[in-house]
Length: 325
Ligand SMILES: C[S@@+](CC[C@H](N)C(=O)[O-])C[C@H]1O[C@@H](n2cnc3c(N)ncnc32)[C@H](O)[C@@H]1O
Image 1 (cartoon, rainbow, N blue to C red):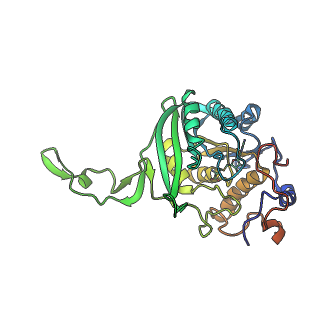
Image 2: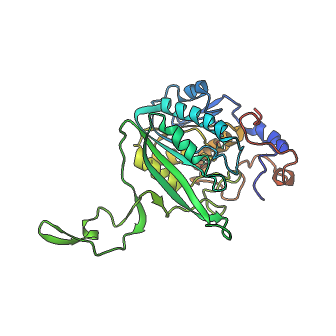
Image 3: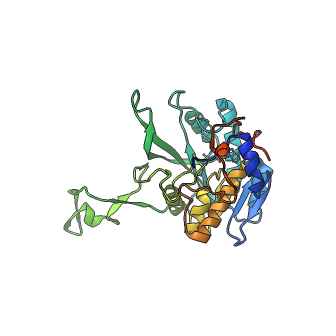
């Protein structure tokens, strides 16, 4: 069965009653670890409620819509005004010493908007820029008339002076021949290394993009990030027991990564269906040890018909105002 058409009004009307959160509501994990909200992360009061009773976060992993193909497309000014609000709310939710990672897109057909404008906007805040990471996707687009587009940009900023733990990939070190004298002895670079594998730098080529054959795949979540990428960020920039925030939950990847690594996640999504999928993914993992559903539907309690997966009869955009409560 192909993925559900969650932009279709009728399909959404059928699935919404199966979502436990309405706009502004918050789910508290019965095990006391995580919090999932359904609401607008630009809303200062909603974010304050989400964080209530929780220690300030040591890490934020934000993956907003990129103002590109998927989700609603707005003018750059509107997009920046949206970003300014969630960046401010992120700053307030973070500890004095904390890390912020932001996945960001660049429209190559349109002067790479909104990346340059976003970089200028965040330069006006108190966040300090630290790294510009590129993750290589396996699949790309535009192969015949342009360079294949295979990159995902990840920006790393800090507030104060958070700790950072160096991370290693699984790629074995194969380059030899860089000798140095250490304690009167000539040593080859591998002898001097802390690891037999390559350290993760600011270009990541070792992470598989999520696709339908992978266990972690969550159907209906086209913007899902790989767990391996999120866990690399978590291990580099937080410790066990820390609070990690993610205001754009979608498939609940940060939530699941926090569960697997012993962090406490505070997350939300403006779309009740995405908030529900995130909670269900955590519950599914706790029940089965599985990280996703591969090709199966997370809503196995609802009978899916072809009408739910066919092209929309009344298309709606996933914008703040269009999502039914
Ligand atoms: C790019 S996806 C995030 C992908 C996520 N990192 C993952 O791995 O599954 C963006 C998500 O942000 C949500 N969103 C858009 N605007 C929002 C807002 N103002 N507040 C909260 N969530 C929002 C969308 O519904 C969508 O699910």
